[in-house]
Amino acid sequence: KQEVTQIPAALSVPEGENLVLNCSFTDSAIYNLQWFRQDPGKGLTSLLLIQSSQREQTSGRLNASLDKSSGRSTLYIAASQPGDSATYLCAVRAYSGNTPLVFGKGTRLSVIA
Amino acid sequence: EAGVAQSPRYKIIEKRQSVAFWCNPISGHATLYWYQQILGQGPKLLIQFQNNGVVDDSQLPKDRFSAERLKGVDSTLKIQPAKLEDSAVYLCASSPVQGRSQPQHFGDGTRLSIL
Image (tube, rainbow over all chains, first blue to last red; front, side):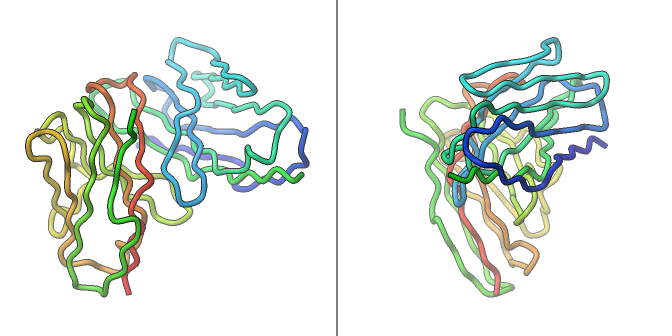
């Protein structure tokens, strides 16, 4: 059974810092991995999707990497801003069958002005 | 493009009562998902529809939960009777077609509190 772990559970940084969020998964046979953002009281917004054949994806100040063999992904946020404060969730989809996304519990990020 | 619409935003009921949630996906999206998100956890898929057919309901507690998607557009999720452990946010998502590489678009959810 696939399990997704996100470390740390919470993180507080001063504005302008670069930061890394970590995601690990137990079964490396994945089809893709997604990073989502969730603001309080809101649904999820997809940030980046990495296919299993890819090593990284970039969008603006965000960069996500994938090391499938070691079961790890990182989300790098450059020059953090108070508006980046939110919970960041990692989710993986298995390679075989019509399997659902399996989510981690998320990392709650606070960027202090 | 209008997003995924859900109602109500909040619902408070007593245990053993029944409750229903409504979801209107993005226009033209064939695939619809219902997720349960317990406080401090990631979302867990309850049921997935492709048009008006069920693709995956393996994690739906069928003794108390039911869902339908008549005409392949709007969907309702019902809980009857509710238990204390059903307190959670219920999220609806949709995607253009069935496929593991398709991004899912989420609504803001319905926050359910059971007293």
